[in-house]
Length: 165
Length: 148
Image 1 (cartoon, rainbow over the protein chains, first blue to last red):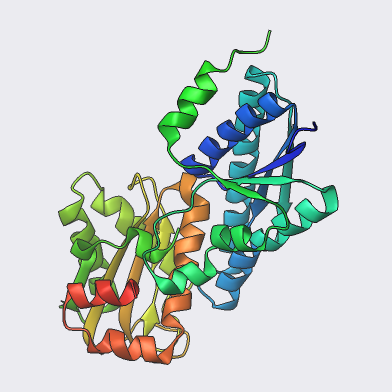
Image 2: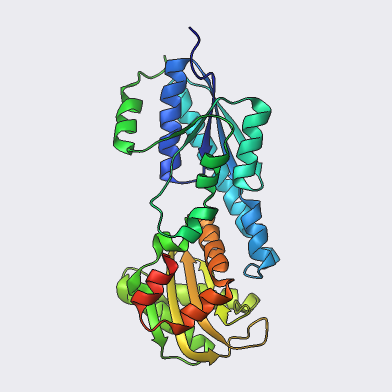
């Protein structure tokens, strides 16, 4: 019998929840002997929207873009290190654009068969629910989606997985 | 992250007493400092005024979104205020501003900062929403408005 998932994609967005999702994905990838890719999408669409609405000046757009790209690299490096610790190579991918569209395209182009997400927060507003990138990713992903909750359990799972030799 | 995720009833002031641009910014900052005493008032004011010096954050339709990155806060904060009538904020449409959303965020929360600003822009783009905001008479009413 073949394993159910062989190419796993985890989405990082700079939140603690997304790092927890990455830890769950590392555990899963090791158990299933699957490949693991971590993707961080620099949300240039939101930046452009802020410039268009004249909330941001061009200089701010450039500054914040640099900040987010720096964050993206730091989080990808962190997840790569977590993977190495557990003997799971993590392929880091940094891209830019509209978050849910970029993730959907990556899944299609690279035939990923599981998307792992964290950070589905409590819905406080119907208006924002319609526009949440994480919700849109969950609704539009062309593959099964695993939503990771309960960080304590995930930490225990991760810690109990033996480190790589 | 959206505005509704972090909006705090204690950080909403209706009506604001000030009737000048600098006065409004100071009143919003003071409200934040009152409820988060560890926050450095002068650092926030310096960051907000430095951003205003580059160009007013008074937009159109009575909305102003003064914002800045600053080491004065440990997490992103939004302070909301509404004046009884529009005041001069050097806004981009040349009209007065009545609805103020001051957003301050630490440097390491750039993504969240952008998402919150975008969330405010989306909400306030609606004429109907702005009318409801203008009709609000308490922090509670404004809070509920953003959570609908």
